[in-house]
Amino acid sequence: MEVTLTDISPEVQRAKQRFGIAGNSAVLIAAIQRAVQVAPIDLSVLVTGESGTGKEFFPQIIHAYSARKHSRYIAVNCGAIPEGTIDSELFGHEKGAFTGAVASRKGYFEEADGGTIFLDEVAELPLTTQARLLRVLESGEFIRVGSSEVQKTNIRVVAATNVDMLKAVAEGKFREDLYYRLSTVMISVPPLRDRGNDVALLARKFSADFAERYRMPQITFDDTARRLLMQYRWPGNVRQLKNVVEQAALFEAGRTLSSSDLEPYLPSSSAVYTPAVTEAHHNYGHERDMLFNMIFRLQSELDSLRREVDHLRTSAPATPPLVEAIEAPAVETETAIVAPAVAQPTSTHLVPYSSTTAIAAMQPHSAPQVATLEETEKETIRRSLRKNDGRRKATAKELNISERTLYRKIKEYGLDD
Image 1 (cartoon, rainbow, N blue to C red):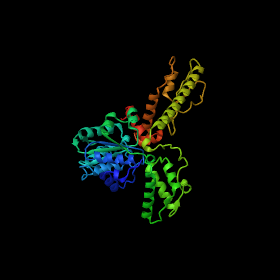
Image 2 (image 1 turned 60 degrees about the vertical axis):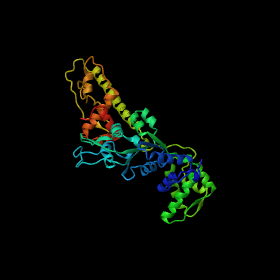
Image 3 (image 1 turned 180 degrees about the vertical axis):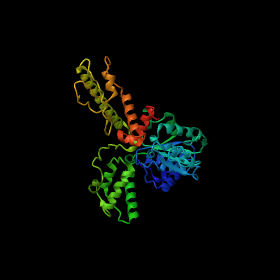
Image 4 (image 1 turned 60 degrees about the horizontal axis):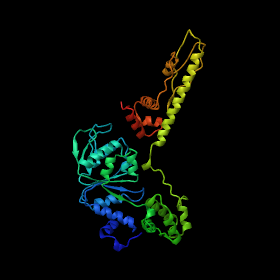
């Protein structure tokens, strides 16, 4: 449903003009109206909506219509900052706090004191950083990395996410107390497919902007093309629409496009919307499966090795004159350190083996001890860290997992030392 210009308040109309927001759908106008109303009240705001809907405009509106408009506005993409440095980026650090910290540095919360900070993709924050953020929201206090001095900041936080936050809370990926503290006021940005005639309006705007910027004849759309634009699901929302229009404006300059002209620029799956897995939605299930498969392969190798040793022990003479343990070097693969296969005996009384596990298995009346999955995983990570002299980037590469997963496993198994 659309609203007429007479139904739009002057504040909302000015906000649309100031930030170049095109569209008259009721859901969009309601979202802008909510941002304008909450702006003067110093509350935390959580902006939700799918990727590409234009969530970044709403914290700008809130800052521009608040009492903080003359102070700094800083936008931070939480998903683009590595876990190991995000605390330093947000809260600052002291000289020598970590390798490479050659001087003290202010963080974003200190730089934006008195103003507004926009935390985009806030659901990507690590749990330890979430605890620090909660303290800032509740008391305005924070501590630089490597410091023990508590500092104060007067700041307003506006956050945004395209993640189902309640689901993230239920899965333990986001703190419940922080969620309720951030979502004092919530603004839901509608997806493009729910904005009705705004699709055609935006398409005209993007084609006109492209023609003006590059001094090319403008493309237009006939009724069939407009219907196609309206029927498409737009999984990438406004960002995708702009991309499609600019491609058509380049290759079809000056033409009036029909639906058949427009179809080559739209994915063939237009009738069925299947959201792509983006970095913002990234989960570590695949990497966890790879790690577990690697551990299972290692466990299988060990079990096979034990069976061969047991066979050699039972088939050897009762009182062998000589028993030697020949330790062969381990063979390193991309994913794990795998013990080599048992060599063939060089004599009737020689029993070679390359692991202390085999020595334990050769003791009489001793049953083979099967390590648990957690113990095997911990030992695998420990060996790889030792081999790479503690370099976590090299260790993560060797184990074929992300650094974030490795950091979490190191902390979980107490391998920090």
